[in-house]
Image (cartoon, rainbow, N blue to C red):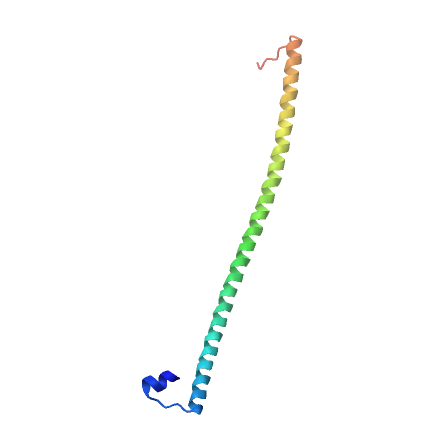
Length: 105
């Protein structure tokens, strides 16, 4: 308010000073409302992004569970294969010990 008096030579009385104060407070309120509106918009965007991220994380978790299940099946099949190989080797040893030959003819 001193600026109005010193730079523009506008004499300020107490009523004018109160009105200028009110206008400054009013503009500050408008700025605060605008900040709050922007904050809400940004928060809504962040919430939407977080929801997308959570959805993607759920999808990834489900895929990881599927992979773990498939790996368990593969491990079981590999164990069966090893048992079969051991059985075949044992049979080959028995056949060789008894001089028995198996021909593919």
